[in-house]
Length: 207
Length: 167
Image (tube, rainbow over all chains, first blue to last red; front, top):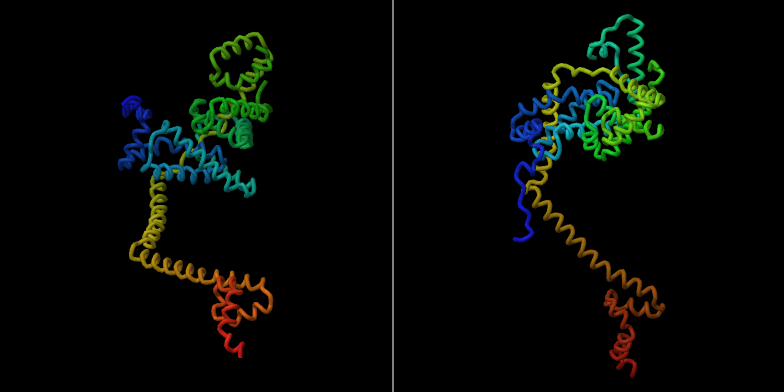
């Protein structure tokens, strides 16, 4: 009949099936738990660090990461690839972290922000930097604390954009999809975030 | 391009996310402006400092922890679903619905009976005392149509007792 569009090919209906992570998720949907574990092994550390930098709490970050993957697990039955798997996963992580922050808003800031024991930091941080002398090491630790303070002081949407850009190396386009906003909005967020960070961290910059 | 404009574009320029013509304009300006080059350096170095926040390593056994947590959650979820299924089972649902239907029917019937009585009471409130006394002696007091036709009924009463009156 005139006017009826030709149905798109399967690959056009599901444009993200070239994404290997989407393929793994679709295999999991068919019952292959090993595919789910592969996804988990690939993304667990990244989601953990996203949650850690967002909440600044190691224990909370572990719990939130588990929660994210539980949501992914339950979403398997009805999963339809509408975006790259990574984008979809970070969207879940962002929303999970935001919900956690809302739940904890009534708690004291000190309780919410802090627990990072020195011992666990030394054991678990990647120690790829060589500390030449104790005073340099102390200075780096102070700077690291200042960096954490600076990022944590950003409004949530600026913080999200900074973490996704600086630590997860997402493009502006993928950040926009994750945050459900326009690329123009991402540019504005990162512009303001970088300006805030420059102001806060300028005392630690050699000029 | 002016310094004020360039300085607002520097953060995005550093991420290589400007439009091509904007990128060229910023590069050209930076080649000739020391102030903007200093601003660029501040942005670069503050951004570089973020590397000082090192990655966290996952605690060992996170995959097995996940499956254990999932099994616990599913157990809880399964119990809730089972409870709901039990409540909605046909052998329980049918008698419950039947009971509910009876309650609704009886309630509607009672309310229907109550409503005319209420209207009759309201009509009585508007009547003169002698009319009220007359109505109270009639067995048909609960019927609103009787009350509204009280004059006719009074005439009928006179006709019924005509023999007595004549004598």
